[in-house]
Amino acid sequence: MNEPQLQPQTSAWSMYRAIVGIGVFCALIIVIVYQSTAARIADNQARFLAAAISEVLPATQSTIPVNISDDGRLQTVDESPALPVFLAYDESNILVGAVITGQGMGYQDNIRVLYAYSFDIDAITGFKILESKETPGLGDRVEIEPHFLANFEALDASLNAEGSGLQNPIVTVKQGAKTEPWQIDGITGATITSEALGDILNKSANIWVPVLERDANLIEPAQGVEE
Amino acid sequence: MARKQVTTTDEFVKGLWRDNPVFVQVLGMCPALAVSNTAMNALAMGLATTFVLLMSGLSVSLLRNLIPREARIVCYICIIATFVTSVDYLIMALSLELHRALGAFIALIVVNCLILGRAEAFASKHNPGRALLDGLGMGVGFTLALLFIGVVREILGSGSIFGFSVFPDTFQTWTIMVLPSGGFFAMALWLLIVNWLKKRKEEAEKLTTEVLT
Image (cartoon, rainbow over all chains, first blue to last red; front, side, top):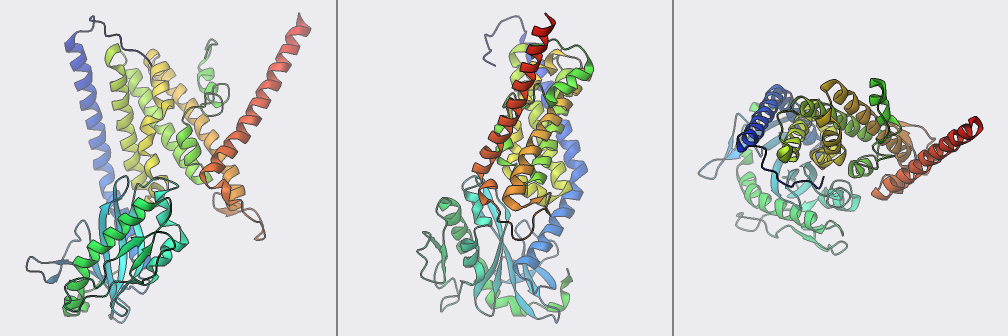
């Protein structure tokens, strides 16, 4: 494929015609495929999210999507936003926790995670990666490495005395160096990805946990949507 | 590809064995080694690549008189990327789990040199019918090769085929086979077998020619 000795016999017009023509042809195909698969993909994503919620918080029977209003209060929403947050209720409509979506930059691209926050023990108790394009065999080990996943059995996310943010920031430490319950034991060889996850959880929990702790009980559970 | 292509069947069959993209041309190694940890992933990646090969071969062949020589690579890449994007959406519509398992490798089909190679070496010089047959042959050859590697890796690495257990519970799985290095071991094993078979066939042919003369 060592080609191009540009020869003048092809006119600029035929070059434009070919490149623009093929551009339009390709754009048309992509639009057609996108339009015809969009509904199906949205369906799949909703099902996937529901399954992920039950996975991170198995007691969940129904959920209510919520967001933070302009004046900083927790409110219910009709349609889940791009990064949905849910209050989760068990079969007797008792609040069992919150399921929160967080997002941030990993090594390759955005990573989107879903985690469960437990009001009982003020900790993150479940964790699942929804979307990641991390390096196969290195960064993507955060999804399977047992010692890393064990971090999220009860990752401390308790609030400070004022209730304005986390008492201790969630940080990722080197593999084997975890000494505190709010630290994440990282993975050697997946340093950037595991640090990125600590960062995502810390930022997201700092925004959500104070509001959830203050307002979650004010939301009426009867409105819960059956899973 | 030095030999003359005589029949249309030959166009299809050559990709399966004589010019097999993985075992003979050793093209597209990145997906062949990376996504062949289970038979299912290998099959899905093979089929996705076959779809892109077929559609890009057909499009390049149909548009071959419109594409100027100087701008051909950019046009081919554009066409290939279009079908890779399409296959990405189609897989998402089919199964998100599968889409997650194949991960970044779907997007990387764009740079699989097998596809650009077939567009440049074959589809741009032949009619759509032959280009389709060539794409199909190469695609099936690629899928089979990935499947061969995937089956070996899954049997030894997880003790199963397509998720169905084939060994008793006492079987100690060879974890290394599902790790990246296992791809190289399985690949080496198949290259050894294929080359041994080829050599044996060549020697038999040589012997027949000598006897005849």
